[in-house]
Amino acid sequence: MEAFDDENPFDTEPESIPSESSSTSKLDISEPPSPPFNPSRQLSSESAQPERPFPSQGTRRPSQRPNFKSDFCCARDRILHSGEDIEILITDAQKTNAGSTSPYITYVIQTGNTESRHRYSEFESLRSSLAKLYPTLIIPPIPSKQTLGDYAVKQGKAKEDATMIARRKRMLQTFLNRLARHPILSNEHVFHRFLDGEVSWHEVLNSPPISLLPKNILKAPSHDPTDQEASPAYAALPNPSAAHPLRNPDQRFSDSEAFTNKFAVHLSGPMEKVTRRTVKRWSDYAQDHAELGAALNGFSLNESGPLASAIEKTGQAVDATYMSTTKLAQELEQNWAEPIHEYSQFSSIIKKLLAYRHQKHVQYEMTQDGLEAKREQLEELEKSEHEARRLEAALGGRSTVSLPTSPSEEPSEEQLDAQAHSTSYVPPHPGPNPARRNARVPGMGLLNALSYTLHGMMDVDPETARRNGISKTKENISQLEDALHLAAQDLKYSSSTIQADLDRFQRQKVADIREMAISMAQSHRDWCKKNLEAWEEAKKEIDMIPDHPNKLPSPPQPPSSTRRDSMATLNGRK
Image (cartoon, rainbow, N blue to C red; front, side):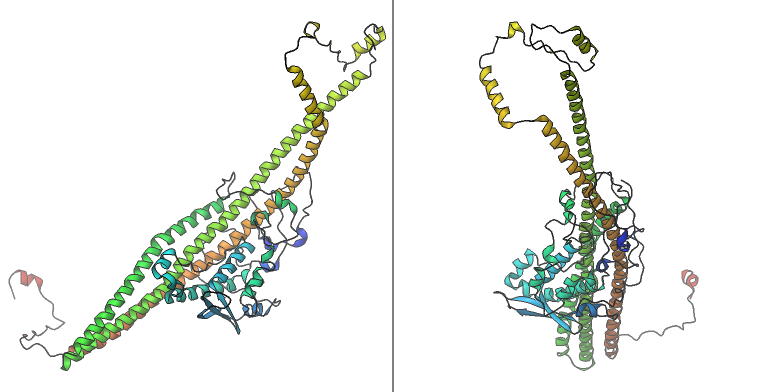
């Protein structure tokens, strides 16, 4: 299969799209047409750089907001694309039992002056719906569900854990802001309705476009799975598995799969483990200082004078270390551990995205193989039909020669000459052997009668069956040609769109990791600065403690300008 053109299909003019009508002629699939233009799914020119394989070098500038537009579908769309730096905030998490028999946590979302409330399962359904509506885009992840271990340890209080709720608030807010900054997903009206507090989310899930989603997105257009005017030839496409091997794999996406696997193994393995261990040790370190500070403060009450003040000041410095370390551990959790986990989820999402593109490629090759098999079958049927017609013509030529009507009549010389000169003449069968005419195998009469009856009931007409087979095979070929046309179109669209979104994700990843590293450096700098200030204050109080009465006076320090003669010491000279 020839390499597909990497031109962004969003930029194709609608009038350049050929018709999808059926044709029995051979299709040119070297450069399949692009799907219809859809403004709401158009990638920005900045993100359309498919010539760079993933991972690309990226840049250090943060991902920009979607381009300003003037045509808005609703008030939320106007807020998101107003040109201002709008931040979606989750301001609170409240416990409620509205519309349910058991209590649950609802998250208060503020978008400009609009406020909406959603529970975790509704965030989950939003992301699942977007993944089905846009099978070629990287949909940001949401925080993971509670594990069985959490439910086993905390029993019924697992959903009310304050730490878990605070973490979900932060990560759900990140999810919403990633959607709002995506060049395509920010235009999706389903997302706008999620941010609208006056819309029932249950109604959104049961209304178009979500209600129009097919059961199998592999048998739907990649550019718009909800398209109700899609060609019926999509039903003829096979449904391959993600493990099905490719005959002609695309090296770009093979490299992307290999890199994503390494990225996922590194993040979910050593990176996350070390990060969790580091945060835990900082938290334990802070807790130890909290206990030590309390002990020192209590000990200062038993002393008096400068010693009591010095011990108290040391306890306060230990308390300051406890508070700064607690803050450091929290910042590491929020600004390093959570983004690392998020990117571990991103790697799984990209794997699924590449698996979808792999299935589309397998679908194309399987359709191509099926079409070739049907063409070979048609060729065999037409060859059989040609042989049958030739034989029929030969038998028809023989019937034009008059033969004797009775055995006693001898053919004339003219008839014999006509039979001799006729190239299509077939001599008559002499009939059964007189010696074997009456020799019958016992029981064969019943079988012959039964066979004759069955053939009469089936009414088998080889000529009609053969011609029906040819007609049906031609219909299958026409349908497979349409299906191959659609599979090639979807494969081209999927390849270019996934590559463009991978490039956008790479730029986002570079900018995010840069911000993570800067945040970690600032957190450690602030921790060191606060501890230094606290211990310098403690040192001043410690210096005010008088020396021990039995301590010898310290010898005078030599001037800084004099240098020690090491050779004189070695030679015993002073």
